[in-house]
Length: 570
Image 1 (cartoon, rainbow, N blue to C red):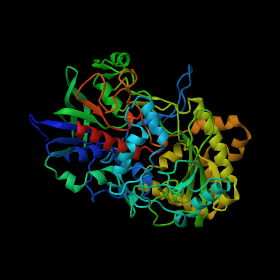
Image 2 (image 1 turned 120 degrees about the horizontal axis):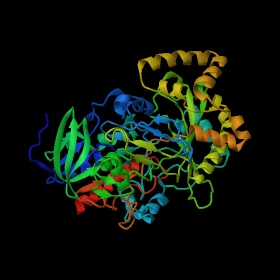
Image 3 (image 1 turned 45 degrees about the vertical axis):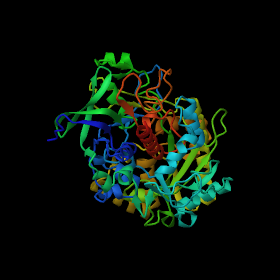
Image 4 (image 1 turned 90 degrees about the vertical axis):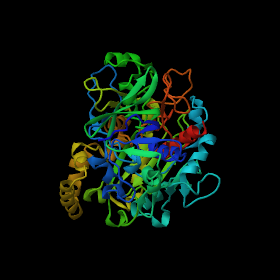
């Protein structure tokens, strides 16, 4: 039983993920700050992580139900307008474990482009321009490959790349095709911001994942007298005194606890921060009233402006010599960034990653994926409370490709990807290339289990032994849609396929965005303080005004560094 009695912490941090881990570490550097970190998932101290979390293949941890939110699903497809909403929902894996998304993600440590952060400032996030955030990107990293004015040398997050002489066959073949199309080697994605290909910087050193928790919640940090942490702690609502937040109501191991603090900082992520605020009375007033929630602060932006990177994939059954080299720390090794040239859209708005492994199981070992996504997206969705159970998982609607600019660039991107896949440089590494739809069967075998390992091992042996069996399994269990040739014959077929198969990349963001005080859609000020109440701050990917042209983990860690610095300097 947990009993803090009458204790009032200086700070309660909700969520020990990419930002919460940073905050807990930095705020406790000041010995007079008392800090309590509440994590909904299980805590694993450094050196005691389970095998799945240390596995370098992302889908091993993300596919293990005990590390993700079990009931979370989302609608990805664009809304149908006035027609009945019959869009399917798919599971959307978000980390429910110490370290949050940084413990289960792909370890891609790219920052984004300077225009991303200058755009944040233009949207009202004063003090978040590229010039303002660069010191915090440098503070968080220790780049083992590059130095200079854009890189950090002493941060807790180590970064490494695999250069061309270490690339496996499929990566090499895909980049050969990209070179043939005229793309140049940028070498350093985080310092050279033009179009081209590059090795992906990874927060993985000596084959070990560097999560936010392993980097910031070290054993020495955990031993600080002013720091306490509770895992398996589900925060239900905030406690108010008038409009001032005084604490949180927590359920831990079926025990209800009230815990108090001078300031509460929500770091629950873009999909779970809005529901906590809305259940507590902060959000769109009309929606909350309809659900029977007393309105404390009418903020129409809570849960709105949900952003992601919409994408589609081609699968590739690889020749044996082109598969992932044993011992490599990652399957996502290199990428291509380019500019669509669409009017009004900044450069660097498109992205392709040739990955050398498609899934954690034996069939996935034999496959590669060409991942395409819109790097600078404009479509927005929303997160809302479930009317039948406001304490359950929220309704998540990404509404992808609803902005025509995203759809037009996806169609063009599919053509680029198809052209690369038809080039002899890439064909020399593959036996079959096909559009992927991720049907029900593929998603079921993607769950990490011994049974799925066994049945996919049997399937993999058959696919290697017989071209007929390979094609049958691909066509009946993996592809389930038009061929590349059929896509290329008709743009409407491409669009229809995109509408059916578009997916995200676990980069949910922007649902409680920063902005100026006179912006009714802004939820926080540039210091993360929630408008309309006191004693409450948000520090996670939800406060991003727009999703950056990058995976969101490193930007979220940067947010943790910057806001903790703001708090300490106040």
